[in-house]
Length: 245
Image (cartoon, rainbow, N blue to C red):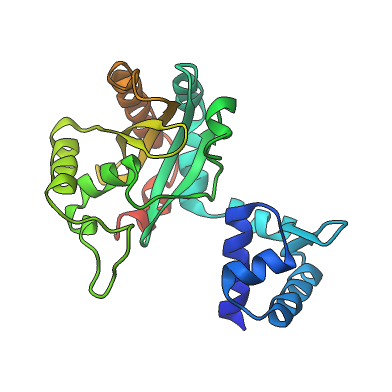
């Protein structure tokens, strides 16, 4: 039952709003089971039931999410740098690794980009995305699929290795996401006061023509966030879940 409840919540986080049938299909759970789980989650305030039978993430879940220490610390350190970066034109975000996922923890959305890809805190990005390559450059072993994993999200090979090596050398990753229309992305590393890489700052824009000219702005934003982290009390301990220490 607990596994099913989390599956429903994951889909609601991804879809933002959904009905019973849509959630049952997305999770693979029987419709009766999904209905029962949604009812219980709504009673607890974990999901919110809209008029017309639609569901959203509830206020209690929102409050829990706001208390995640790494997200709080990174969000506080990134406020001004992300505003400055977003002024270059695009959606400016900070992302972290969460197991096999890359999760947005802070961001300022650009309306044009938002119509193609909604970059909100809590959103999971594609495992082959540019920001993930930047994080893999910090931990190249993470670019290799775990035993037994398969599927399009894992694309080992020379091309990916070159992207990771290039990001390691240049301390920045540049690429595009194959969406209609295509999105360009530039990402740079954010480091904790200990020097460990804990996140990536990224700018996502429509098209790819401007990417080379955005590299310095993204590097600057990442460096400013890293510098701001040194002034956040207890940042090292709060960020330890992202460093493995």
